[in-house]
Structure formats: C-alpha cells, structure tokens
Image (cartoon, rainbow, N blue to C red; front, top):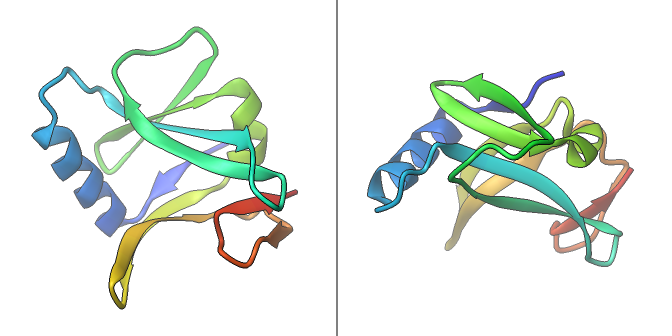
Length: 108
C-alpha cells in the first residue's frame, strides 16, 4: 500500500503548508461520493490524525488517508501540472476504470 507524490507535487504541498498560519501536519486525501462517474477526489490540509487514518510519507510530506478511501486510492500518485491557463493537482490512480469528461470524478 502506498500513496506517492511527484517531486513537483511535493514541492507545491510544502510551499502551501509553509504559507498556512495553523499547525498543518500534512495533506489529507479522500474519496467522496459525487460527480457524474460516482466518486470524486478530496484534497485538504491535515491538522490532526484521525482514528481511522493510514499515514504515508513521501518527499518529506505526510499524507493521511482514511481506511474507506484507501481501497480506492491505493497506488495513487499525486502530481501537480500546469496546462495552458489551468494548474492544479492531478491524481494518477491505477484503480480508476473510468473518468468523467471533465476529469473531476471516476469509478472503479
């Protein structure tokens, strides 16, 4: 089981965390029921570890994932890309069988 970050994604996360005024300990990844394909990614800062979290570390970044989401996210690599005028985090998820046209949701 693993969740990893590209060098670029890790650098962006570290910069975002450094700018926050709170005691942010890392990044939380999750899956929510949403979108036209059924599941959507959730990405937020983690200020504490929850009881059902599984913790990973990559490139010096702590990554927290709840047990339910981990079955959908195991093996995922988080990247950060700039394409044209858009930039943001991109989930490279080997478990996703289909993605919606906008890329915001997926199913397994």
